[in-house]
Length: 286
Image 1 (cartoon, rainbow, N blue to C red):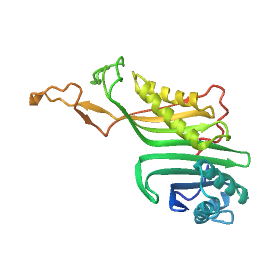
Image 2 (cartoon, rainbow, N blue to C red):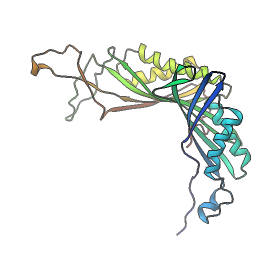
Image 3 (cartoon, rainbow, N blue to C red):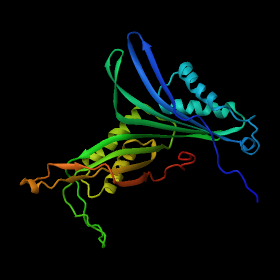
Image 4 (spheres, one colour):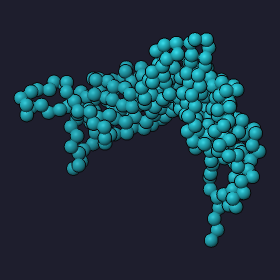
């Protein structure tokens, strides 16, 4: 029997990095989770255990911390690209490097005091080869709710369907969004802020007949407002809220009291792509 090595890579996952900028008495805080992954001519280590071409994952971890000290962090898209470019340029056997970063938010409560913000996370992934670079951004954990202006009806029914049609419901979701940039000429911080604002405003302003409709409106709003974005991908769980039957207690319930179910939940996923967008290349490759 014959075998061949398939796609592979290795790296250091989830390097926790906190950097404090001590500019006088007023400090700034950056809190990151950085993962590296390297690919290339790694057949020898898989087939024979020859590690002469394997940059240790511990070295990758150390590089993350050293770069934070030497060059600072700045925007996470640029920090990820800088790290990925370093690994490709410095390691002859490495032809592709992918660096993924999650950024956690802290709210300032004093000159050198901070309170951990909610569960929302900003993300960026940079993929670099000798032929080019691709950057995606993202966010997850953004919880949104409309308490009205949402309906769901007109769906097919079969012998297993029990769901009642409704012209009045709560629509709630935890947004997980990723977006692909069609250019590297981006003002990263303001772009992220505008993308986030666009996702929220589209959710708020869309009279929703389905979560799919809302998903498309959110992706389209980002492409409309941020021309550097070529594609948006969204994953939206439908966080169900069921009206509680209070009739056993002699009470009515005029759309006021709900049970918030955590599972199971509907999961709506889809993407919106700009017409004429550049090829995705390695932007989404893992």
